[in-house]
Length: 93
Image (spheres, rainbow, N blue to C red):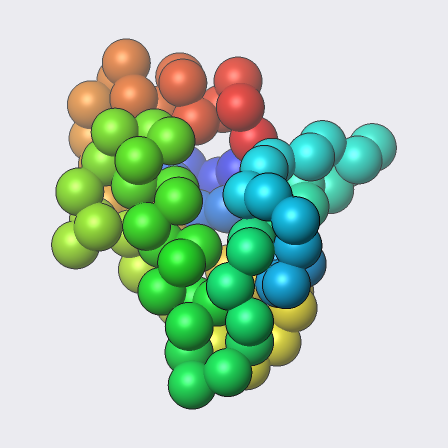
């Protein structure tokens, strides 16, 4: 679920660490992201930010986990105002 704010776009996702490959899966009204990294010492969070950065061509510094650092359910802020990138995000998530 995506919500646009003055700061950027906020997305609620579920993360599944320790997966075989990095991928985005849409399930009904929920977005699940599989990450190969283990959830130890923040490695999965770092891998998640890197994966989203590469996938959506957004700088890592513009992606912030604002809720759920230690949870599988996370709220992510994409600090972007480029309408083209926002549309790409909305289609993919």
